[in-house]
Amino acid sequence: MDVGQWFIELVRAETRLYNAVDGRLRAAHGLSAGQYEILQIIAGTANCRVLDIVREIAITVGAASKAVDRIEAAGWCRRRANPHDRRSSYLVLTDAGQQLLAAATPTFEQEIAGRLAGVVGEDERAQSGQTLAALRRALERQQRET
Image 1 (cartoon, rainbow, N blue to C red):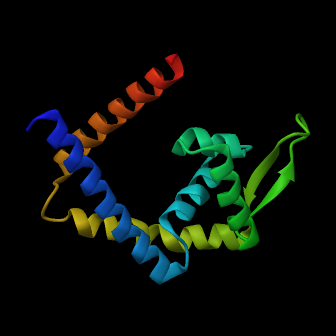
Image 2: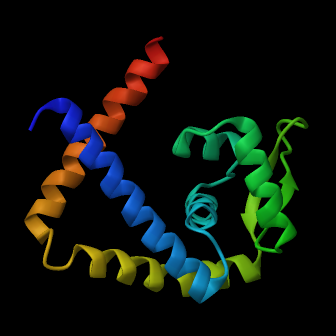
């Protein structure tokens, strides 16, 4: 497979998998896959800031800030003053956000596992995961250098 076709297959597979996960999360929990990802980042990042989300997901500050605004309006997170920098704030999950993330995580994992079942085995998933992680790191490094 040439690199152009590989890229097309990668993007189309990712889009279809993302849409399936998004649909399942919306139906079962009322949140999008993007919101789920942001809740995961907030939960897993000490003193999480909007800039942490920007760096992790590779979206603009404006897009991340608006996404956090929507999550905050839904009552799933809140901003807490950053005592070291008055220009930024820390993001923390509310009890409702923690409960939602805990309830949605099995749905997220089951949907992905179900879509991969019979198509991608455990060894293939591990190998492709390592390859994708290496590619992502290389792309991030190249972006920092430009």
